[in-house]
Image 1 (cartoon, rainbow, N blue to C red):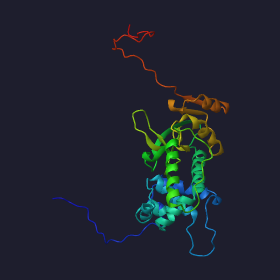
Image 2 (tube, rainbow, N blue to C red; image 1 turned 120 degrees about the vertical axis):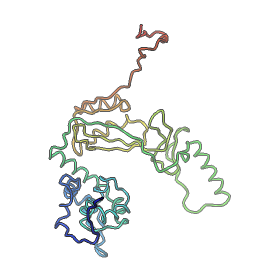
Image 3 (spheres, rainbow, N blue to C red; image 1 turned 120 degrees about the horizontal axis):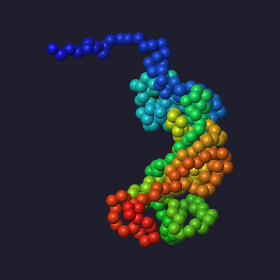
Image 4 (tube, one colour; image 1 turned 135 degrees about the vertical axis):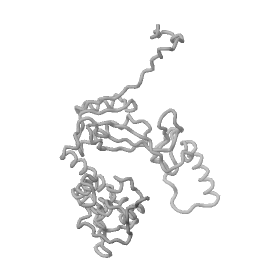
Length: 309
């Protein structure tokens, strides 16, 4: 006979006096909330209006957002719902339930606070021995922009569109201020996007298609913690031009590393010289060789020795 564990949805029980007792001792909520308490209050964008409804404390909203992002929850509406259902989110929100509009507004206005809190996380990790700043790894990824590549036009095409708009204005008239002319004269083949000019056409590799995207780079600790130490987002398809600036930019925060590991996409004589000038050892791949296969009996190209014979 099948046996079932008895249950009753109407059974009452008492919650612990502290919500933290429901979380494991190694839950990331403890670490995030401790780092948020160390973030300077001057980094937050506070509403200066003294009257009206009381606002949520910025440390509460910052801790809630950081803990949500650490658990893969990014939507403001999902974060609001999670404050009712998730134990860790309830603890991060101090049993309050900020609405999604408040969360979204705070996210847009508090970039400096996020940066300060992330720095405190790294400093706490370094003080506790979790983070050892010796060898770091830098790598990049192409992130699709919220724009279609068909809206990207070259300079000569933009000139044609401008002339067409000017002709249409002469026929029907124009309201408002005239557009400000460009200050420089770019080459005809330079491209710009009509809706997202900060992005650029790029592809992840030769095997992928061109997409309107950004180039995001991250510096990660290679000493075991795998914590992200620095980030940078550019519109340059190549990784090499920004590697030195990304690594040296760590000096104002967690500090400089001793060794940098990177793939061949970051190979740059200028970057290597800049890092070596600051006593940083760059270990950058210079590309793979293409040796002939052992069973390849085709004649070698002229002037090259056959490795099989």
